[in-house]
Length: 152
Image (cartoon, rainbow, N blue to C red; front, top):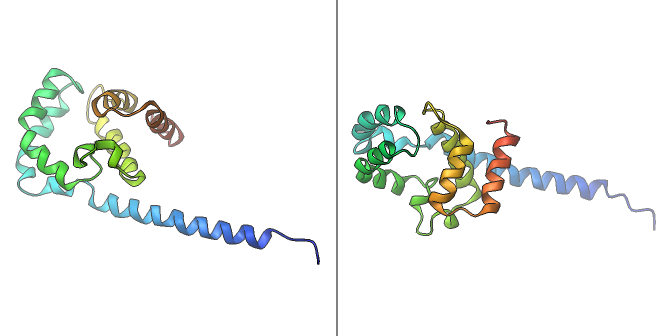
């Protein structure tokens, strides 16, 4: 028997991994096309028309920010129920989310942090770690991802 050449098996593995990664890519593209679309329709749109400019003027997680969120409570409940990238969508919060959910969540936190004059994705991750009971390991993964994608 001749010497084994692993090239064919390695190429088959590479092709299979690529096909699996493309499933992630397709899911992320679908999420990007539907992200927060519920905010563009009643009953959410009317309240977001009022509160989005108010929230922009607040310091993230300040008392004023939290008050605005409290006033938006009913609208946010509607929004969370229709958008699975929010921990509030899931019975067990972060623990019921998928990697696809988490990637969309991280993108959402980054984009949202850019709306505030004091916005900072690392501060958002830190604040949300406490807010949602995210463990240290996942927090570190989120921070590592922000750094890898150069989102600082």
